[in-house]
Image 1 (cartoon, rainbow, N blue to C red):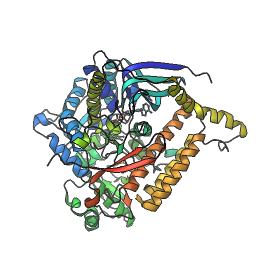
Image 2: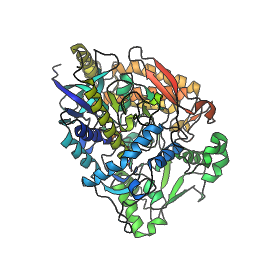
Image 3: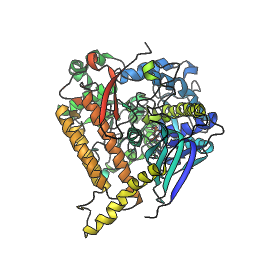
Image 4: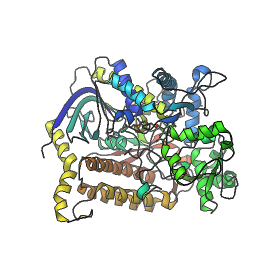
Length: 610
Ligand SMILES: Cc1cc2nc3c(=O)[nH]c(=O)nc-3n(C[C@H](O)[C@H](O)[C@H](O)COP(=O)(O)OP(=O)(O)OC[C@H]3O[C@@H](n4cnc5c(N)ncnc54)[C@H](O)[C@@H]3O)c2cc1C
C-alpha cells in the first residue's frame, strides 16, 4: 500500500510523553542547548499517560528543606515496602533530586494545598503532598513543548532501531501515526524510553462492558518493556507485579482515605482482620511482618486470606469520617481530580459513603517500575553512588548503549510515582546529553534495509485483515486472522490462570509456569496472524504484541525466582516461603533478539543505606 514515510534525524528521541518523558524533554534542553530533541507520543501529550486525568497527591516529596525527610529515609521506606529488594543507588539518586522537580511544578502553576498552620505543602502522609491536580499533566506537557524541537502526537512507536556500525547501540526508533497511517522513522544518537507500565496483561476484574476500567491506565501497554526487550536490553524484577486493594469496580484510590480521612477497613462482620493473619504471615516471611510500616504486599495477604476464609467483603469504614463536612468534601474531590469513574460507580450503585461503607477488592496484577513495585530495565546508576555492578558509564542507561529509561521503564526504583518519574526523566536526559557529547562526531548508521524490514512487519496486520476478510461473510471469527481484542483475551486468560492472576488467588508454581510459558510461545506464533481492520486496530495490534513480550518476561522471571518474596502480590505454591539465603538478590533477564531465547541470572542487592 502507498504509505508515506516521514524521516526525522535528531540527537535525542524521547519515546512517550508522560511524566518521565516530559521531564526528559525539559532537562535535555537545559543541558543540550543546541541539540535536536524530539518527543514521539502515542496519544496527545496534554492528556497522556497515567496522569492524564490528574492526581490529587504528589506521592513522592522529601521536604528536605523543611527538615521533613532525607533521601536516606526514602530508600529505607521503599526497601522495606519491597521486602528488602530495591536498587538503592537509583532510589537515593531520585530522592535527592525530587524536591526540586516538585518546586518547578509549583513555579509552573500547579496549585498546591498548603497547611493553614505552617504555610507549607499540606501533607497527606509522610511522603505525599496534596494538590489540586486536574491540570498536572497539561502543565508538565507545556514545559516539554517549550523545550523540545518537536512533539509528534499520535505516534505508536513499535520498535527501536539499532546502529549498524557498532554492536549493541541504539540508533533511533520507528512507528506509525495512528490517525494518518504515515510511517515514522526517527534516527537518533540517544533514545530515552519512557513509554509507561503495563495494564491488561492479566485478566481484569472488570470484564465485558466494564473492561475499560482498570486501576493502571488501560492504555499502558508495556511498550517501555517490549521496546527495550526487543533491542536486547536486560530487565530486572519483572516478577515483582503489583496488586492493589482499591474501591471495588471503580478502582478508586484509597491513599487519601487512609491517610487524610483516617478511614479504616473491616470484614463483613465488622471486625478488624489483619491481626488474625499475623502468625500465618510470619510463617511465610519471618520477621518482615514486624516491620513498620507493614509492607503493602503483606497487608494484601491478610485481605486475600480473609476473603478466602469466607468473611468478605472487606469494607472501608467511611460512615464516621463522612459525618465531617470537610472530610466528606475531600473524599469526593479525591475522585473528581483523579478517578471520576469511582464517583460514577458509587452513584450508579446507590452508594453514599456517608451512609454505606463501600467495598474494597484486590485488583488484577499490573507491571510497572515507578509506582509501588520495581519491574523494568536494568540501568546504570550515577557514578558517585553506584557499586561496580550497577555502573556502566551513564546514569539510567540500559545495557544497550545510548538507550536510556525513565519512570516505569526503569527497574529497581519503586515509590518514585509521578514526581519521581519526572525526576528520573531529567536524570536520564542529562546523562543522554553527556553521552552524545562524548560521542563527538561519531555517526549513527541505520540502513534502509532495517527501516524497510520494520515497515513491512508493522503494517502486516492490515494486510492480514484485508486478505482474510474475504474468506468470511460476516462476524468476527476468521480462519486466517485473530482480532486484537481476541488476542488480548487469550493473553489475559493464560496470564491469569498460569502466572498468578485473580482467578487462582494469585497462585502459581513451576508446572503452571512451564505450561504458561509454552502457551505464550504458541501465542507469539499466532500473533503473526493478527488482523487490523483500520489504523486504530493496528495500534491495538502493536499494543498487544508489546503486552505479550512483557508477559513472557514476567513469566520467565516468576519461574526463575524460587520463593514467595511478596505474598499478597503472588505466591509460588512450590516455594511458599520467603528465602533470604538464596533469593536476597535481584533477578535479571535478557532475551536474545536473534534467537528469542531468554537467559536469567541473579544480581546482588547492595544495601548502601544502613
Ligand atoms: C491510577 C493511578 C494512580 C496514581 N496515583 C498517583 C498519585 O496519587 N500520586 C503520584 O505521585 N503518582 C501516582 N501515580 C503514579 C504515576 O502516575 C506514575 O508513576 C507515572 O505517571 C509514571 O510515569 P511514566 O512516564 O513512566 O509513565 P506515564 O506517565 O504513564 O507515561 C507513559 C507515556 O508513554 C506513552 N506511550 C505508551 N506507549 C507508547 C508507544 N508505544 N509509543 C509512544 N508513546 C507511548 C503514553 O501515551 C504515555 O504518555 C498513579 C498512577 C496510576 C495509574
